[in-house]
Length: 109
Image 1 (cartoon, rainbow, N blue to C red):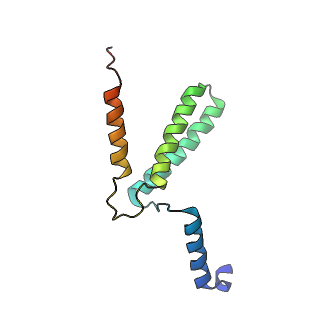
Image 2: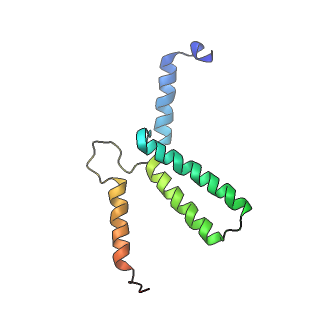
Image 3: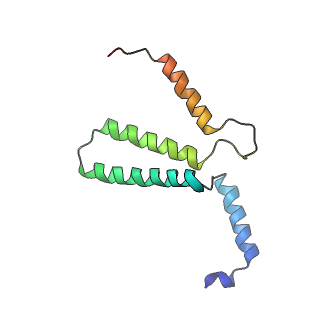
């Protein structure tokens, strides 16, 4: 009901202003959107569970950091445009994991 009183050009101007102030945010659709939503819901449920259960602080911090980083890279992409020549976040993450794997000493079990 309120939309009929607002000029559509003013709505578009407000969207452009919000986009300019907040920066580039990915609009997640399809499988990636479902994965990001699932991760966010799982993170919420896990921390609600940890409020009642006994979980060490180090584990909670590690899990929070892991969930937060994955969600941050999904919601705020590294590349500005889909057609840019920059590396994707997945390739950068895989590169850093591989580098870290070669730096760590081998542990015999």
